[in-house]
Image (tube, rainbow over all chains, first blue to last red; front, side, top):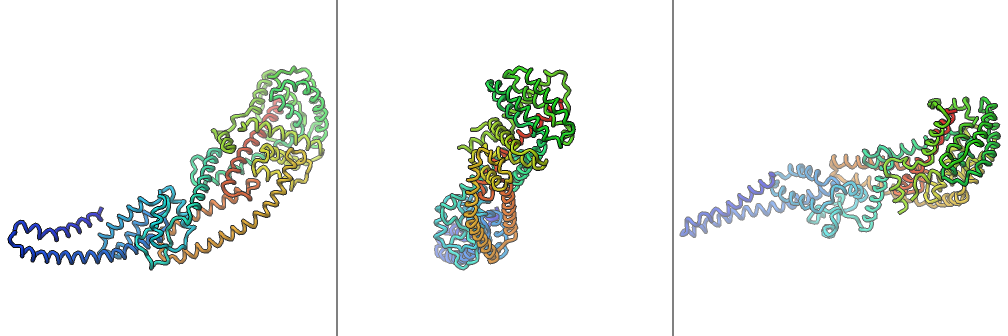
Length: 381
Length: 197
């Protein structure tokens, strides 16, 4: 590093000037006066050099103040890079003093690196610093108190009390520790929740940063709401007949065998309601006369079918199939892209129906990853 | 802990019961009205599965109570009375919140003005530093804008602060997914059966 080389050169110069007479002495032991004569010269040299040094020190102090003031202006989040820039700019103004400056400044940098906050806190600190803009710089007391504070607190740079610089934006720690702690806790809470949301929302793994994450979340919520809207529109025609059977299906799916008996009478009531609803649907249905025949088939199906726990689901599908208002006219309005499955016999259809039933009711793994379960745990904690 | 399947079953049950009652109450309805009723009943059923534990569910029910021109639909909801209480609470809480929020916004405005003046006063403003500050300010503004949008999306979001908003969003997304799954399965089942016919 050039700074050290400069230092070394300077030091070597000093040493040479001082040691030169002493190196001579072993040779000229008798010539003490000469040595003595030489010494004052060296001393003079030394004095001059020391005087220069003192001068340098004073100048350097000013420079340090200046640099300190300059650094104070910078926000804490760009400490180290901007220090370099500041150094370069100050260097031009104090060319003669660069060696010492470099030495001192590098020392300051080191000290700052030790004391300064970690890079992870830079964003947080920058936010806090912005919140504390315009505050005046305090004296050395602040510096000392800040030295006592933890490593993640911001610090004052200037070692001496820079009284002449009012306009600097002070980099200082929080006014009270409780505020900073609360702030940090709040921030951590938010980041934790963002992580949970990241797990829940698909496609959010690659995204980092609050703004993009929020963007994804907003898009996802909007898409889900649109889906609900769309599905409700889709279910308009379907649903008018549907209600009672769905409930029956629900009861069946829970494996309550005792519901078999009430189910039969309920089917008759269902048939009654079906007729009512079919009449309601006449504005929409293109072939109302189909309804009654379908209903009769429904009732027959139900009567003939024997209930067993495994086939409970199939009865629901019986009813479903027979629903007349889902006739061609209406269904044509709906999504026409429904693929028709060729059914060889009734049994195979029931199998698929059962599968559907299982999918429908016993969906337990509909989510990606472990997000929901973890989320539930976290919520209830 | 509530497994998702039980949530779905509960939702379905409540939804279907509400639809039944709705159907029994009125005979003639236009398509649009029907769709709205289906959607509303689905939303309310999903909200009621939360049993008032979350803010969004309560807000949803309260809004439904307030805006609904079909009180019968809401009346049959099991949480109807609670929803009414919640609507009153929300109205009162909103009244209490707005003054404080107004105060808060004033404070924020004052802070912003002082910050701006502070920035103007600072003479040794290096270009690099100001650029970086601008970037962080821009991201802050973006985040604020997006939280505002999210507040509008999630029911009852306007009354929450950021961390609570995220928590409610989490719950809301979870419930919405369950709702969509159930509705989709229902629609698919009926379509399949009708196509079979």
